[in-house]
Length: 186
Length: 147
Image 1 (cartoon, chains in turn blue, yellow):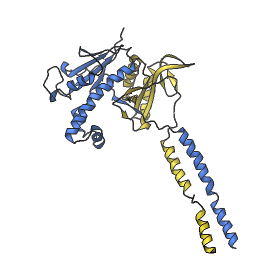
Image 2 (cartoon, helix red, strand yellow):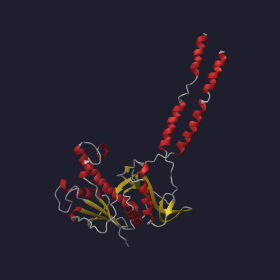
Image 3 (cartoon, rainbow over the protein chains, first blue to last red):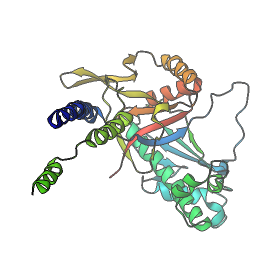
Image 4 (tube, chains in turn red, yellow):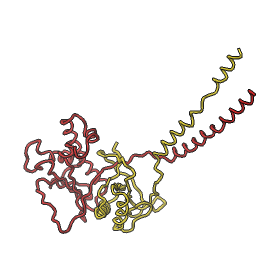
């Protein structure tokens, strides 16, 4: 009787052991096919398609910063040739004019400032991305500084905490980047 | 004495009953994070690098456009082409229709532009113009983090 009972118990336990093997096989399969690569990149919002009947809104010359990049990677920033590492400081200075001396050549306020990037058709993509990166770096610095004064956080922490509508820093420094249609070039 | 012996015998067996549960938990984790759909690239895409980048959190909203020199085999590359899903787009104007259809399925769509670093801005800009016409306005330039 006792021996019988023991055997019965063995029978009940045995099918469970194979389950682990099957699960292991599946696990290994998914381990192999998984690619945990996080998509990173520069997010942008394109303007809506142009309306032929509507005139583009007038923009004051002083609120617009023109950045031209030619096919050889040379940069012309408001009629002045600069190196790529100077761009960030120049953009910061241009956008944040109100916090410093009221220079009439710089933007009236960060809200009205527009940075326009224009390339040649032959300009290579990595030069353009470098350019965009510099401009975004300038805005990131401005936003970081503004958030630190406001709440003491970094902008990233602040941005995750508040909703888009309540984001004061974003309102203070809207990222107005205009991507102009490239020149046909030579 | 006999009582002792029996007790030690029961303790010798390693409790494996919880192992399937653990394995299943791992399995379910990997099943969830796996993205099986990966297109076969017909163009070469070497990403460029940037510092001020952000992550795309909602991967399901993303649809990709690949721009780069066509892979011809034998280590040769042809002219720059545009690839959407598994096919090359011969005329850039077709991008508008393709992306418009995708936008109708998922109105919150983000278009991720995966562009080879040697591509010229002319083609990229043409694709962007088509995206504007298709009203697919949220874009993302795929870049790696600058080290």
